[in-house]
Length: 90
Image 1 (tube, rainbow, N blue to C red):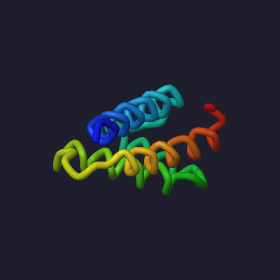
Image 2: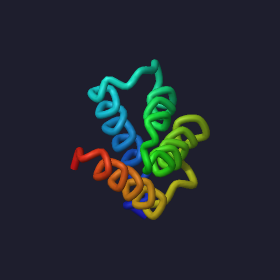
Image 3: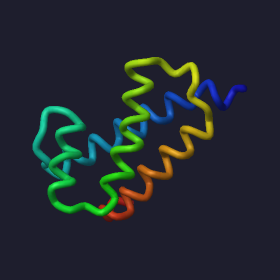
Image 4: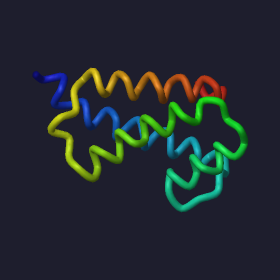
């Protein structure tokens, strides 16, 4: 299915965007994981959403995207969106 073929790229692009936002927030860390840990230490309530979506991105990056569906991408994008709203970015 054509939409499934773009699903992994959607997740990777969204993850990259969120990481740029975390960097702009001046969160410490060399990796997105370290920045997420720093954000979690601030008791950010949507940190689990970010971690879950980021784990999907890591799965794509390390294991490939062959089993990633459009539904998986929508799930991750919703988690990123919810967290960005809580951060008052969107």
